[in-house]
Image (cartoon, rainbow, N blue to C red; front, side, top):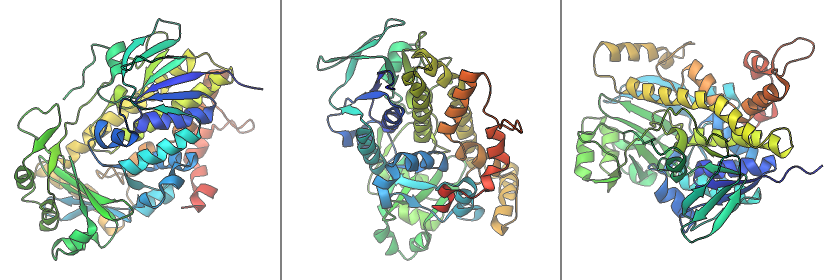
Length: 458
């Protein structure tokens, strides 16, 4: 039996919007994505993202694999061998073998250039039936409560949708329209591996495909490979003496001076950076709502909950939003829900998840920025079992901390949606009819160590 024809509009063809479009197509809804840029490649390079790379942690690598996006990106999805946590001078204080995280969760941990991720999402979204329309800057929304939403673009074209999703980032036009009182509150560089190999001091940093984190009081530096392991990417967040709310061109000497006391190996690579820009880290929320009262317009991604980048979960959380919301909208397509009910369910379930990530991201930055002293020494001591291969239960290295790995990186947005939908429709959580054990607890305590096809593919 054919489902209902539900037409969903998305404002913004960034990573979150395209991920939602992929998931909506899989759920049986029609998706039209309106993008202001004239060329889709410009979206990734210039509009939304200050960093050229993104970490596809296991919570979203599972989506990229399930949707076929990973197959399109191919070798440009780079898997690292290990993560090392270091003091500013290069002393190693923490260590996570990536294979341990991947085997535990049954999913890979990738890093990828945003352009490659964006390209893969464009291709699969279009294969999923999405209509991605460029040169379509949205200038007006007409959203009478309980009715369809009319969207007008700068070129005078009007579209009508059953539901509108604002996936247009931190400067969201959709958010400014439906939540006009909300305002955001107040860097990266790439060097080719071949250039680093020629440096006698720096070259030993690239013997393996690793992620390295150098921690210091008012700055830190994260490095790892991208583009099939050909480029060495660096993220260089630091405190500024002035308030930054827009992109600034940076005197390259200022950048080099900021990191002049770091490990001589990474300092040599910083000195290879030819130019740089400073991007502000802006935060939205937590908000009381992500939607209009009748739930005919809703926000996802940075439009709803932008966060600092210390856990590398901004793009990941946007993709989770789209995956969850699309699963719920699929029930409206089947006739099991009204148009408003998937949005209501999405807000109820996803808002606490996003807020938790915002807090954890902030706290991880605080952990990395500890001043030399008792707290810094306690942090390093607490990480020390990682260096000797001891089994540990907690760690300030949140990329390897068992609880954080399971809670954040082990999260499955589509499974969460399936359970929430079953609870909504049947007023109970899915459970084994004989034992009464819920699937959530069975997955947590037993299914994780059972063989599976997904784990076999790692």
